[in-house]
Length: 599
Image 1 (cartoon, rainbow, N blue to C red):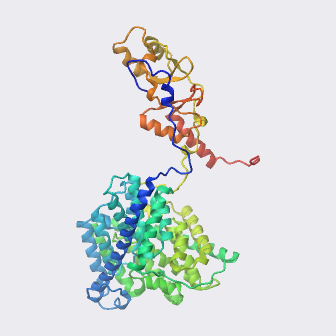
Image 2: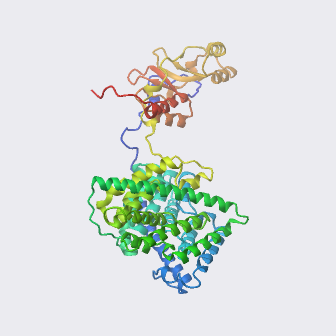
């Protein structure tokens, strides 16, 4: 409603208020997505180069701390971990990381993925250059000194920082910055693992919290850009190539579900134990800067017992997938890796979760493969899919990652059976994932379910008030004042002309204001209202448009008119919008037998 000193606009006033809404379609994305795609090409390139830099830094750290050489040549820790100084190296790395976190940025602590989620949901997708610089360095030191982690968490945060910093160079919305941040994260993961499809699904299931073309398409462009760069920067081969001929049978699917359920128990147990150990660290009587040293002691001891548990463990994962470890080696790797990873991660050092979960899932699957029919490597692959689907609550990513990183596409149905069953078990067993639990402990609740907005599905006619009390535009201000004083049951009423067409909304406050200002005797409501900017909707409009109009013009009630005659047929208020949620709840919770179908 707007007040004016003169009468409303004649003739065309109503039509000016009843504006045509946006063209309805399956999606709301506009051509601005093309600009984001062009930006995603740059971000994807940046993410691929960030992956290269991280891998080189890890190699440099390995050579410096274990071999005393300044070299970027890729070498394994296994050759040096048994040396007398082996237990001291993780301690040195932990001390450096503690100092970097204390005096550099506390955000380098932890997995990296929860921090990226927080930046998306609560930080308007703004990340600092300090994080972009310190996270890969601290992670390289952690992994290079034997930390039992993976590079994916750090590269997701680093790649996300690349996308965020690039986005902050332009005038973009928070949603557009989110798209580029996640595009950078997907590019970084693709650069490390060579899995663009799994990276895109990780973006959708874990980072974006939406599935919209506006964000999905640029993320795809970024991931594909990274995979195009990968052969020139890192390696064009799969990380864990596995030559298996897989025939999917009903018995195999049942076995895969069983492997998935055990992987779900494994994922739930790891997550629960991780945060219980983290609680113990919070009880230590000294500053958190020193906690990584405690974790490093466990890492050093674990390295003596089982050297293959240290570092990223890619060689060990390869050995498990190819059945090169004896049963004793599988059990030893599973137990030691689980223990040192949980303790080190709970200590707040810098590292990731995906690669350790891959190793643990593969090892458990390899153990199960000792009694299941078929090759051990197949069940190790299925175990990877299961533990990722359960621990990260990303079943599609888990299944696609397992087959994409090994090239065993024939195993996709089995991988999906395992990841889906693990996903279902962990959802029922624990409230939050290993990623969202950390965010929840910082006082922030996350709903990870993707669903259709009920406001986009419910029409105005379904929730509007049809029996509307109105005030005629010929009513004088004195009569309106008496009406509000004695008879009014609502704070505001539509004002209509002689044909029943609304010309404005009037409230008690409006009438009182007009009464205390100078006005001619007999002045009417119609003379005080201008319908030029009166927001109007029709019964066939959807509630999403109503909400947008209420926000844009700051009103709590909007008249509903017939699209042809422009006569008032109803009124929609803010409280009526709650009915949309009621309709949605009925669809989800009201149970009844079906009595017939569509005729």
